[in-house]
Length: 309
Image (tube, rainbow, N blue to C red; front, side, top):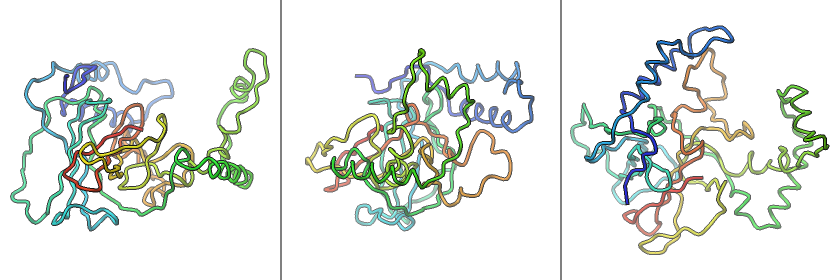
């Protein structure tokens, strides 16, 4: 069984950094409405950066993803003597199309001389989806509840009815669709179609506003989406896994702004370029999903579990 699933040629870390720098500069400069983002020379250069190279045969260095001091994150507990959690991963697709993560629990005082030139991975996923941009941590404690899929059916039905009531009392921004586009949505092949109430904000009010918080987070509930909830047990002791850390493709869920981080409530005063506040880390899991890391409550030495949702 091969360790890496390279559907496209891997690229270097420098390729990704130069691609992002090129696109960022292009996003920030003024251009005419019909003008391409990149000029012909830039497009040619971008193509060389995206060409990739043959995969290397030697071990691939890991890439740092997150560093969390336990003192900064309420509820985060590690093994005895540890006050720091470091999350690293191999920035290539592994099992189930996810990067392979490694969890390192350590005591910060035991760290010796820091490497001034740490090793970098030779091979990275073709599109650079697993290369986090440096971010400053702003911990924010929120209360969330299980996804609708995990609730008893009777309770889920009650919450649906309650959500319909909230819809009546909530003002939503007017859609930006052109009237003709709306007509195309409601009339298909000459037959009038009724809108599905479960697709409106009332039917998903609980899901978007109250249940599972989107974005990068410690603990919380699993954001079940294209898979139904299922038991997940440690392969070593059969204990039920508990969520440790979620790496998301953005900080919003697209359904509401109720989970907007406090530091992002104030809109940027100017252009943000390629990197927006809602996607500061610039990590993408799958087609815009999230990666949850689950750990065994019996022992953190037991293998962890990675799930895409």
